[in-house]
Amino acid sequence: MTHLTEEEMIAKAYGESENTAAVERHLRACPLCADGFAELKRDLADIDRIEAPVRDLRYGDRVWAAIAGALPAYALRKRALQEDAGEDAGDRVWWNLAGSGFWANPWNNLWVKGLGYAAACALLVSSAFYAGRVWQMKQAPAPVAHVETPKAQAPRTPIVVVVLDDHLDRSERFLVELKHADLDSSAMESPLRDEARSLLAANRVCRKNVGQADDPELTTALDHLDSLLADAANEPGGLNAKSIAELQQTMNAEGLLFEVRVLRSRIGHRAPVEDPERGGTI
Amino acid sequence: MDTNDHAAIQAVLAGDKEAYGGLVVRHSQTLFRVAFRITGNEADAEDVVQEAFLRGYRKLEGFESRANFGTWIYRIAVHCALDRVKSRRGDQDSRVGDANDPELDQVQVADQAAGPERLLLSGEIASMQLAALHSLTATERTAFVLRHMEDRTTAEIGAALGIDPNAAKQAVFRAVQKMRRRLAPLRVAT
Image 1 (cartoon, chains in turn yellow, orange):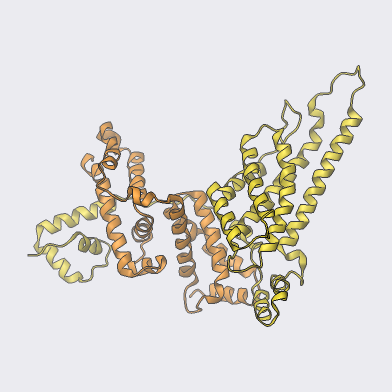
Image 2: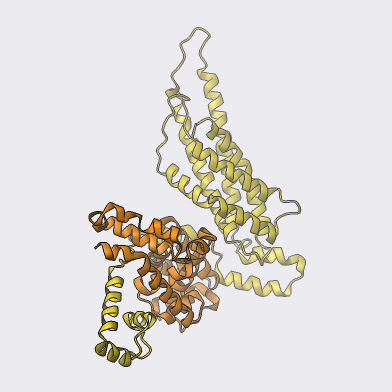
């Protein structure tokens, strides 16, 4: 009598036996195989199912909110592809932009939004610094006056928190775009480089401020981001499929997207707290 | 296929991007569950869900209307999760693939010294099971998770992994054999 192999028993245990009737007949007739099969069933039953952590009912909405910005509308995309096929090579960039709805409604375009946020971010940072300087000058004590406690500077700090949160938000979206950049298409190369340049300037301002806040985790993340953005912004001859692939590799190797997401959730949930030693917060 | 899904896909392809949001909301939980089971990591699972829906959107024009969107996007998620596990583990597969490695056996049964009482603790058992799962190659682990925990047939596993059903079956066999060998100390102790 030929005994059942372990593979035949496994197939039977999962209900995928190729010859169920013959296998069952054999199991009834052969105590050795019956014992082996019973043991296999016990072993499989002992291997617990991994239970995934529970996600609340709003989870799907959050996923959608996270990706919606990166998706171009379909009909527009299709039309752009059709039109692109009939245009000269020189017009391709124009129609790629048209395909993403850029000219129809520029504010719906992620990159325009990005540039808008960059401008707003830069304006906020400048305003915050200017307000701080003016405030400091106004509050500067006379030579013999007592030194004001740092708490008096508190109203300036929430702006910095908001700016940093905005910066991390933009950075995250940039990293997601980079991660999913289509290497076969040149449509995203120029917008990616422009956004990297814009983010690089804002990143350096944030990094400078964070340097005073004694937050090594944040400083390290911004350093990593700085390095990646500098590479993306200053690639000789502009970005191409090869350089984007290298950037993706660097980003993945450093776990940068994850790092930025962790920081975002940390900063997003953190109320501005004063640094008692420095009188400011980040 | 689900008529809601079908209508949503038609709307998306007609230019209503927001209709895709309905599909995302409807299928996110399922994708998260399978992504978590394959990656074993919450953050990775969340990334996988997003990546799967992004890839799904880009490929939506190639989606056949007769097919089931849930199954289709599930396969994409499995692919994304498998890619993630492979990229995380790098060359780990080749290092831990040999179940007869005496060094690994030593690590594997080290907990026996703590005695059967300790092994009975569910936490200990769960951690040994997880360790056993992690000792599988990415493909074996994914095939095993899909077969043992997601109740998918080998044909479905083959389709999800992009391999022949027979290859999927062999991956499940190898995974079960390795799991049994690695969990044998537990059986003896209990």
